[in-house]
Amino acid sequence: MQQIVYDNILMIGYLLVWIVTFVWYQSKHHEVDAGSTIILSYIGYAFFSILTYNEPVEFFVDYLYDPLRLFPFIYLYLMLMIALSPTIYHHFYPGKDIESPKSVVLMAISILVITCAVILTPHIITHFKEGLVMLFLDNDAGKDAYEEQLQGAVDSGSAIQNIPSIIYNTFFEISVFISFYFLSVNKRNHYLTITLLLSLVIGLLMPIMRGQRGVVIINFLTIIVGYMLFRRYLNARINKAVNVIGIFAVIMLSLPIAAITLSRYQKEKTAVSDYINWYIGQGNLYFNNHGLDAGGIRYGDRTLNLFKRLIDHDTPKNFVERREKYHNLDLDDNLFSTFVGDFTIDFGPYLATVIFVIFNLWVLSQIRVRGGTIKLHQLLLLFFTICVCMQGGMTLFSFSDTGNLRIIAFALLYTYLRYHDTLMQKYPLITRHY
Image (tube, rainbow, N blue to C red; front, side):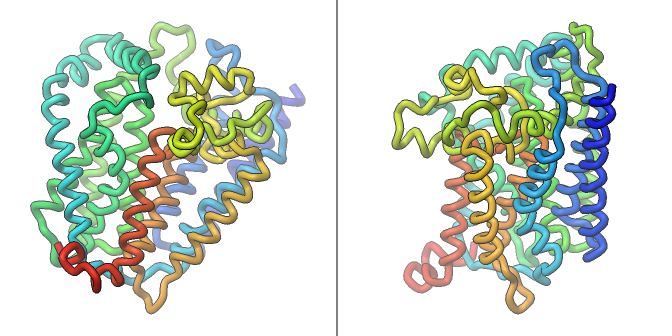
């Protein structure tokens, strides 16, 4: 009983620290932006951690929480704040406007993403009834779709399958970024902008067809923080339209996500609400228990999977093989430990700290606004850090495994935009305005 009281004090304290952080963040600059959204989400996750700790999912008896400790919460908070430091800087020193690169590359990426979305649309239409509609007609549809997707996981990472889907997923975050950037400029190609925005819907529908909740939530959170990043650069009419569409989207996405949740867990003895609490709140607790010492490390096999496979053929090619290789770990990617936990389990807490500090110091040095105007490559780099913080605050590092392709896409576009002026002088054809 005494331990339970102590654990609740720790969790309430962790929640209060994030509430104080939000108050401090907003007191410096009253505008609600991407950083505000991320910190509010961390407050929500901390709240759900309290709920799930006090109402554990007893069906998962092997996943019950150990007694909590103070230092892991301190470490987690500091690492999350380090990751948030570029966002905090931009909150305090935002650019008044965006320096627009006169480049055809943004249009080329947009057309590529739209083309892939068009190719994928017939598949979604064909499977609309057995995928989306059946979620509401068949109680087992969501569970069956998810189990079917898991059965194919053994082959993932070993062969190239469905190239349009790979390309679309690789550029999803970037397409969100470009969509809101196009909305922020005065002279825009309205047809291209609207079509690109509509193509984002594919990223929300495809996972639902497979009975996946996590990908839907991550993609939708990406759209939210993409909007919150560009919100100050959009006119009032566009902001109003996005808010209305956003509310409608939340309602429409909640229905299939609820149906999938009920399909998976309705036959268990534990209440579905307890599973929801566990799903949202587990990350902080499992990190506290094992994030700093999981009984070993994975040597980057998750966070740098694709990169490692280029130089080490013994690297597990998917999560099934990786879980078999590291079956002795006290914590792996079968449970959430936040994106911080992914790095501490891969590299250990000391090297993970060094990685976070060096990377975010470099980002801070690159996004400094001069003359009141922020350049697009600076905003893209900031958006990458925002995606990491928002997507992985509850779950894991979303750019792991095949997500490494998305890191490469970000890096290539950032490098191009960073040296756009030099390229424009040498190759005017590929750098002219779209």
